[in-house]
Image (cartoon, rainbow, N blue to C red; front, side, top):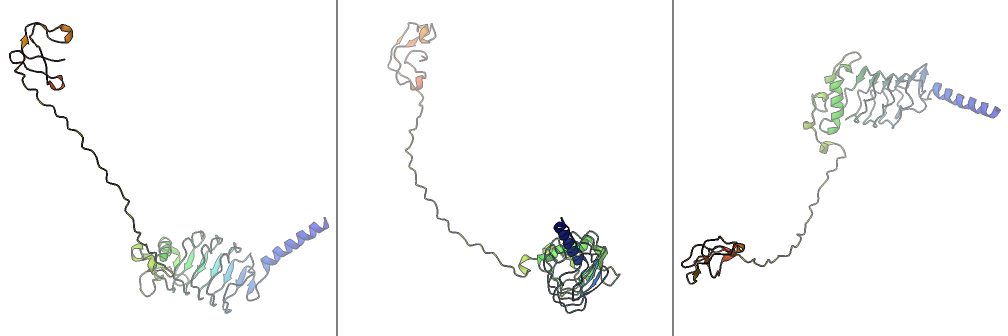
Length: 271
């Protein structure tokens, strides 16, 4: 019983400690943490989970670690301007659903990972100017579309809305004007061209087949037979003849049992 109670107190104390402790490189006042202008190369560990305002501007931070802000779910203002940030981790702001201000201007950012801003549902102001945005690489298309859709919150000065001040590096072209047709994956850093090796196809041998010529069956028109005598007797009805008509005494060379002609008789039918 006592051991369980003590363990609960220790856990609670650790939780309180993590919530109120202040990193040694920073100063804290209530829910505001001041880590600006400290020559920091990275975001300090141990920032209180209750922090609502985090000042990290004017340092020498070159990169953010994945998940660095995941515990700071109460954060409302994040100042990362005037650093040396070259890239952002994917989904680095996903847990900051309460964030109102995001300040990223004056860094070395060339693009924003796809979906990086998608969870910032409370955002009312964002600063992105003075970065060397690479508008030749297709990676810029996410930021281009996002700025176009959220132009009313993209600022330049403290209260000045100016989305077109987010410009492509080396030009005056606004990032939000960039289209897919003007970009290429081959212009992205680290692009590796994929080559297709032609394959040699060995033709499949198909033996030549010899077909024997089929006999041609021709039906010749029967020729008149002039050398046979006719009889005046009637054909028997069960032979299929027409009663009362003369019949040939002999039928030869009648193709397919067609009609044969006798020299002096009428047409005889072999049925």
